[in-house]
Amino acid sequence: MKIKRALLSVSDKTGIAEFARRLQQMGVEIISTGGTAALLKSESIPVLEIEKFTGFPEILGGRVKTLHPKVHGGLLYVRTDPVHQEQLAKNEIQPIDLVAVNLYPFEQTIRKPDIKLEDAIEQIDIGGPSMLRSAAKNYRFVTTISDPEDYETVLQELETHGSETTLALREQLAIKVFLLTARYDSSIATYLNHEQATSGSYAVSLPLEMRLRYGENPHQSASLYGRFSDFFQKLHGKELSFNNILDINAAANLIREFSEPTVAILKHTNPCGVGSAPDLREAWDKAFATDKQAPFGGIIICNRPMTEALAKAIAEIFSEVIIAPEFEPEARAILQKKKNLRLMKSLEWFNSTRQEPDVRSVIGGVLVQEKDFAALPRPEDHVVTKRPPTADEMAAMLFGWKVVKHVKSNAIVYARKDRTLGIGAGQMARVDSSRIAIWKANEAGLSLQGSAVASDAFFPFPDGLIAAAVAGATAAIQPGGSVRDESVIEAANERNLAMVFTDIRNFRH
Image (cartoon, rainbow, N blue to C red; front, side):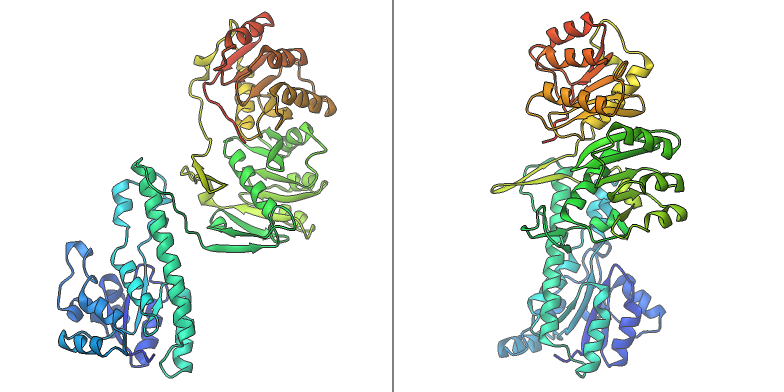
């Protein structure tokens, strides 16, 4: 269809002036709104303002400007329908052949920390999606652009086909519009449903980010949807696998627990070891000492820029992925010698206080919950034993508690104030997780004397706590809440253990 008239109304003004200029050079009449019109005028591009086109002024602070029959009639007009032709002539409506619209940045707005509800609501676009949907519905005759990346493609078609676009391109652009508006509306509904604490349906529409070679196993197909690249940038190495992405997600959630310089090693989404120290190389030594076998083929993450000294240490073992907020040039040079090793940079917004929901598929639907980032204010008020913990014991308990919530249940972690000593994960009986953690510490040659033990859920019987005491633990942190709490507290008192009840369970299924 030959393009004679175009309506341009964009929030993201990237490339719009050059696009309009080239349209105008092809003889296309430009209609525009508000800030877009002002920009085009400043670039000496002839523009017909929307209120002159419709004969109706912008009102309500710009909320109503394109919601007008002359706009939507011009977009929805079926060029081959004689009744439409008669009605357009009768109502003095002119056809609009091309629309370039992008929407108010609602999704970007709600990512900002501490965004207010009223500010988010102001970024809900009404006229933009309406114009896009009208034009996309009538794609047989109207060209619809919702992404600045498509300006050049449309211009090339116009130049190639004598100011016309092909049906194939118009159809492709229309599909893109409906995917965009579906995602846009879904993000608004999800945000309002969360903010207003109302009951309602849960809907997600996410763009395809990449098709993966396979899923959890080679016989399973898989794709990644959403905006993973907003959080992580791959600097080096092979393409990411399904399991890599799961591990990166687990590592990122774990490292968020720590403000001090920390290194964590994970395998199959479970922590193998975590260490903190002013120097990252020292933090690595503490993390790696927890388990020197499991990290082979694992994931390593730190919350400070990767140093040359740390890179040299890490390079001695085989790893799948290394994640850091930055890589010093010397460190990157060392690690990039391993061509298959993925180096991932965690981006700034990754550290935002606003959390993504935890969504898991189940038969017939999805489960949606908040992520487990519960804090423990004033832990000294939660001591349940006769003996309060020392400062070092309290620090060790809190360190273990930060880690245990990221270990598959049933989970037990033995820790000191700055490192893990033994980790037991995923057992059907809690006492077995404790035994595994003790065995792992012994295998690593680490003493549990004077350590703290952290449990993701209550000890249902005293046996788990007694096993920890026999292993050398002098302090324990657990949620409490068992019908046998009194007997567990009694067992702790008999062994002079200090114990804290958090009243917060940290299951990870």
